[in-house]
Amino acid sequence: MKIVYAFEAEFGCVMLLNGAFNEKADRVNYPAGSPLYVTVLPLTAMLLPYTVKLLGGKVMSNAELAKSVEVNAERYIVTLSERHNYVYSPRASAVRRPQSLPEKLLAAVKSGDIAAARALMAPELESTVTDAAMIEFFAPYSSVVANPFPDLPATHYMTVPDSHKGIGFKFSITGNKITDIEEI
Image (cartoon, rainbow, N blue to C red; front, side, top):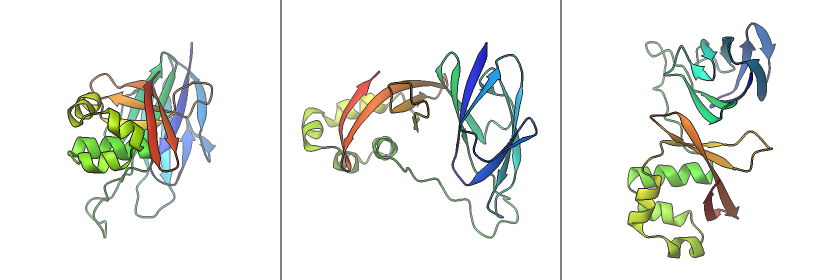
């Protein structure tokens, strides 16, 4: 069985996949029973390179720097984080800010800023949901990852922290507002 890995880096980098240079590793097919070693080479001098071992879709080393989200039995999204030289870095590590509207919505609800979350919704959606329902809906999820697989219907996957599984959702967006959220 083959696994398809899609890599999402939070910074500019190139990668070595089992020693082979890849400028941008969008989707990589690899046997499920074989380890895949991903060496991340940042394009910023302040960041340090590192290697992650993946086996069967799971992160086996450097789990604090790489997160794997299972989309289905044979597809995984691997998010790669920055690695800073904590001792000699001239500036403190910056917290990654949410980029997409679904990420901003989840971050606002998780931080308790319901007014900011409502500002991201279209009036039609905002009027149909209560604050308590919104908090309850987003409670089991820890992050939102964009879908890199064009043949799958979800636009984003919300991750469940304990299982590392991604639940597919279709976020309908018009302009700069979320008009609907539908679980796939």
